[in-house]
Image (cartoon, rainbow, N blue to C red; front, side, top):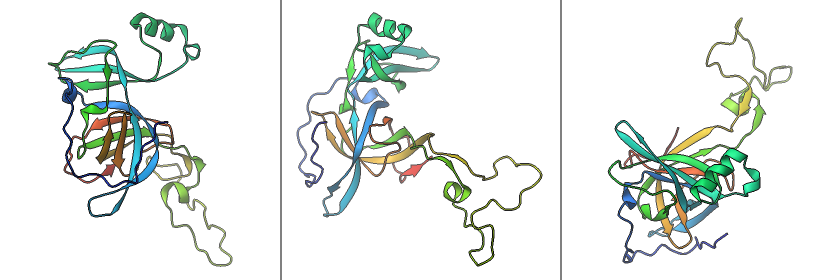
Length: 234
């Protein structure tokens, strides 16, 4: 893992930006891997919690045109060819691209051309941008209603036999009724996370706040649709 010093103060001096590809800002997002959490100091000396994401390089595996829109199929994170079935291995062999673990369609500007095998990096983002991060939440297994839904529970006095139980139920379980069951392990989107730092050399991205998923979990980083609103979870 590349080192990423997150305890130094963010420099306020603006550095001269390197020349970027013509289509850098025409891509709506990238694929990445959550590395963990750290912290940085802002200009006021306040410690800001951030999540470090290894973002790219992503390889273009295909270009898809739909009525009125266009998208590209991106691949991320190399995987051993032995772990693929024959159709999957044949696809990467045909494209002459190393096998990828994670593939996802990302919307792009319909007027920009992309080539199969082209690499896209984190340079589509800069400090101060807002992004939506999509990941899969950590699975908690089967949980009771108090942990899963935040029930207050029954009376805690001596003699009560329903401290954490469900309680009275109708003749059938109504749709949407909160009950014990499987918790976590579902697609979660955290919106409007601010980009705190971009490390172009190591393909690392630091965003303020928490990102869904476990360490080394795969995530999708998209440009926020409503960047002026505060961070929210959907």
